[in-house]
Length: 290
Image 1 (cartoon, rainbow, N blue to C red):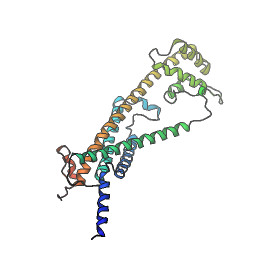
Image 2 (cartoon, helix red, strand yellow):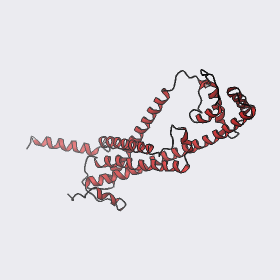
Image 3 (cartoon, rainbow, N blue to C red):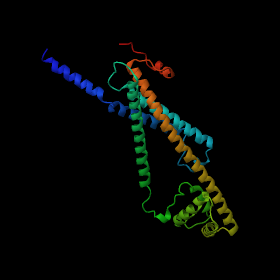
Image 4 (cartoon, helix red, strand yellow):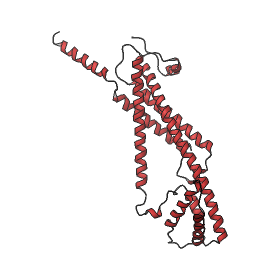
């Protein structure tokens, strides 16, 4: 008996030390990885079926506001589901069963779900940053600042129509002129729009590039300015919807992760769920009281 006593005290000390830890990172990391993976699957599926507020195709700008709102709603719903899954895993697998369930137990479970949500958000942001950096690095290093423009690819179709010519030398390089025209067209969405000097300059350049008459060149420039203003307005609308949807999805995802972690903790301990969560009992039979 005297030999076993230190072992019992040591085991008890280890158990108390494990219980004293407020956060257990193994269930948190597991829940975060599950949430990030499931969110990636759902987002990919949404983009595949056309529920995306942005696209590499130049025709995405013609999408209606209803489709953009539907895409934002899908983004919010997938965040609730994926972060709820991650929070449930974090709460359900949290070690250390409490002798008596109380508010502190639910707080610990909820914080595990919330931490898993935060880690999943950081993982998603890091992945998006890596993809964006890779996209930028793939751009041609031979392009200079004078031959690049933020108008690409936003106004690529408008620039194609503006500079379209029936006959042009096969080796003609108009990348610098195209970039300059794109920068001018970007001002169409400003408060004052394209000023008179820039409009006149564009008309003269279109005449020189395409061989059109002065009247035809003027009509083409005016049409390009109007189309560019519409395209920029639609892109700005989609960006606002995307930003708002991402913010709402993140906030509701945090709430979902907390609630799901609390439900997972109650399932783990065999405790009944609150009335507003009672529907989740169908997924887990109640454990007999110990």
